[in-house]
Image 1 (tube, rainbow, N blue to C red):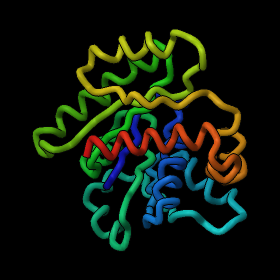
Image 2: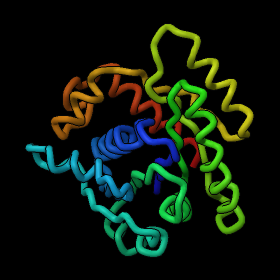
Image 3: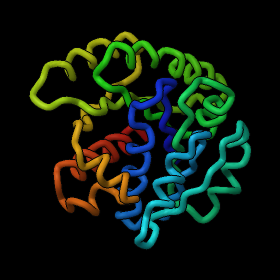
Length: 208
């Protein structure tokens, strides 16, 4: 399974989501590769901050040849997660063409909803070449006990791309874990954040 996390708007949580999904897969005994395509190299920074044994492999590949190189890069791995770039560029197109499913993290904000349009256009273009390619939204940094998550779900419905029922709540643990090079399940085993990530992963698998 190759998951590409993409959204042209920066700061939506692509890296945090990518890292924790990769960690959840690794916790299941899967051999996982995380490819950091973002020129900022946030996933690489996370790996560098880690003091414990790596949970999975992390490589940087910020060039528009991911779709051509992924077969060789992915040899020996069960799953690949791609932490995509923050802009719609040739890099993003390459990530989409390399993926089996596109995961678009969206914060409960109209700006995030509007910014998703360009990624959806690239996805629709890619369907000409990859008719089995899937694409889904995940609501990220949802504020608990508010209606804003429901509102953004209704707004995203205009794109005719599924929105995962599972959501990721705004929690301090995500930032604390990232700063230490850890996955959330290492900081709070069995906690709410781990449960959220596992729910997102299980739902993603259902689409494939």
